[in-house]
Image (cartoon, rainbow, N blue to C red):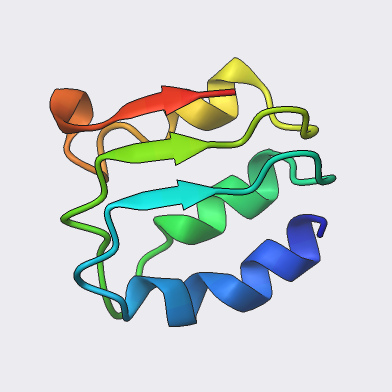
Length: 79
């Protein structure tokens, strides 16, 4: 999937309060798609402990933008 695909999935994913691990490897997801996961709106991924977005189009800056909304050091991220 690409940015638009993750943007479409972001709101439903944020409605999964027990979600602890999210992996989207080998896609075309960029920073815009990642930002959709923490965009203002309903639901927050409070239990999320691990994100994996390896082999996508995202940058370190995009991954770093997820840290504050997802609890900073609470989770850990791989790209």
